[in-house]
Image 1: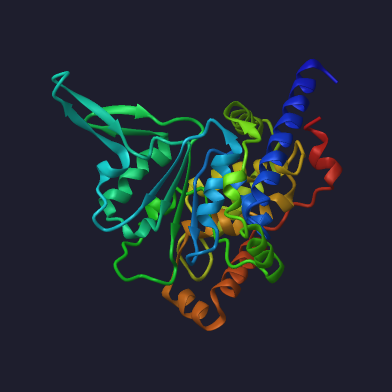
Image 2: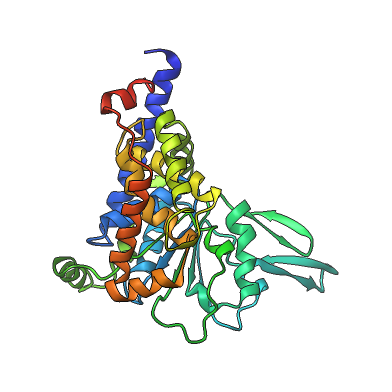
Length: 340
């Protein structure tokens, strides 16, 4: 093994260990949601943001605080969205200092490493749009001056899919900024029983301790870029996303941003499994969380979904995408051969 290959292997081992420690620490608090936690860590590894579509009381806030509490030196902030929330309540504003006879910038809650935006669809569109620059470029512009956000930066937003009174639906352009969308849902019986037992003596969050550093998280993000993706799999990813633009029941398919997100997410999925190469199964498991919120479905699709249930309708959509863009026939040994 050459020097460069050895360095890459060491980086992969280190990054995999960081992901393992993060996962172990978070799952000690959020029970029975291993796949959803894996999705959030996938977004973190890819420097992306997550939208939770979920009913209240499903541990979204606990998950956000568990992520922040697991990383040493992280700043955590929470924004509770209401219709009267102003953009400056998010980004901060300049206040006149009478002693200094000058304006002093007071940063808003967006200047955090982990930002929880609760019920984002209750904020007015102009406040929602204040988050766009932060999500896309890791910076905010206030009074003509651009300020960088701390790194790493991950935004976790929630919205209630049932209660729509007094809400402002996110436009497609903003939905597209989220790396993936998922939901935690209710825990199963055993997990819920464990939650009850864990909180007999108070919330376990107060006992949580950091297990990784900010520098290690940055290394995790850098390691994702070194994961090998075969040319056939890259072409297949493009074909999958292009298929979403051609299917019956779709009015607007996924953007190119969706193609990039699916490819990056597949790399992170391989890394979380301790592999240095992407397999087709990495891509297949991520189609729904990475692509579906970027797609505008027709009224006919929604009518069918009301009849069959949303989950069944999305499963049918996923199957149709995979049928139109066939999985490449590649032995596992061949997939990883060029990465050595």
